[in-house]
Length: 553
Image 1 (spheres, rainbow, N blue to C red):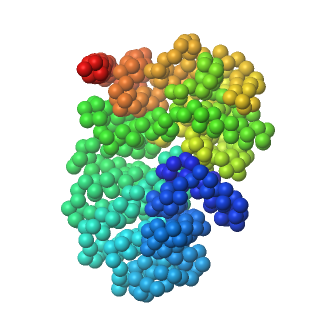
Image 2: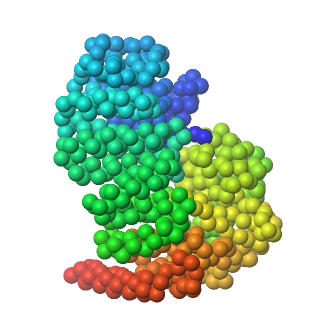
Image 3: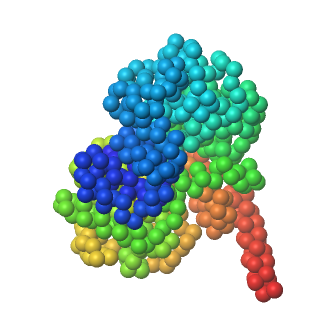
């Protein structure tokens, strides 16, 4: 699947993808066209070049670094990266790198990559270089996924006298790249050795601890645990997290432990950990957990733009209609069509459905070939695929493709949660009818009203901002089961994060309904939810009064 430059504005990311494709295809006309509407300072910034390097796009790296040099932008650094990547691509040292002393660490690192050899400790025995060159060498090895070489450099450096500043800069390299080691959906990249990466985090953490920087070491060890989790070493991750919790009882640690428990198949243990963490989170509203909760319990799109969503849907229709693949509106997008005749301003993404799993590979190849979309290969699971999130490159808008399986006389789809479990939803089989929505030809279920009632209940025509689909929807399967109970806990965190009293009351009502089920909330927990909701209502009301009084002063 395509590999986007992460954490850049969507229009810049799209331009970079076009440039990279044009360079690979030697298409000068396309390369020139890719510059349209792009700010040259943004394009040649250190941040942009760093992300291009981290994605191992040598042609684009060399091109951008050359442009930076010719435009007098950070000439020394840009020249170094240009010459390093040219040396690696050609297999022969050149330019500034070739001019370095033979035992310079940057030259040694580049030479190891150019010759496709592991950088051994013996090579580093008499290595020289300033702080910047050691850090850049480490960065170069990391960006090329030369994990063994990076680890050897790190171990060697730990045996030498070094400064706190150098180790903190090493830590900065790893921390800045953590998200670059994940795809757009927050999932692991297939070419990253997460167990070696965990070892790297551990080495840097110990060195930073040795420099007396406790807070920095804690963040590094949290990332070490995350890498162990991604590498499916759940027992090791939990052991490390519990060790950290003994010194720093942060809610983020509880949340990570609960996630690891779930991923290793113990949903009950995961629920127990979350139940203990919920009151703590309500008290401290831990900022280090906020982003995790925001992105993982709801969705990736931080702000929904109707125009962007319309453009994304139009491009999707163009691709799928081009390969004769019918798709239909579902969930919140279908609700907007049926109730309001448009996409809803408060939506979070675009939801569409496809019958069957059989065409998923052809569909995703068509989306990738179009250049308009990005998706992660690990969502393609054959008969086990239910849900494929797709990003529209131009706008950054997310589209959720739900694959409907015919099971036991129903159409069943589902969502794979970041905690490592799946929740499924079953609908009465339906035919499709063609429509033109937002100027685009597509389909909807022939009996829209029945589909809406099965998804949102009999009151679907009335807006309910506190509706929690994964808990309340009539289509949710195995209500009261472990997956349903775990979803309830995750939604508690999301409601606490936003101080959403209405959703807390909804969760309390749902939990009361299933109070006799395994892993249900006990009466005290449910009462606590209700009391906390009342507290939020009072405090929110007082804040509103204060604002009104201020506005009338």
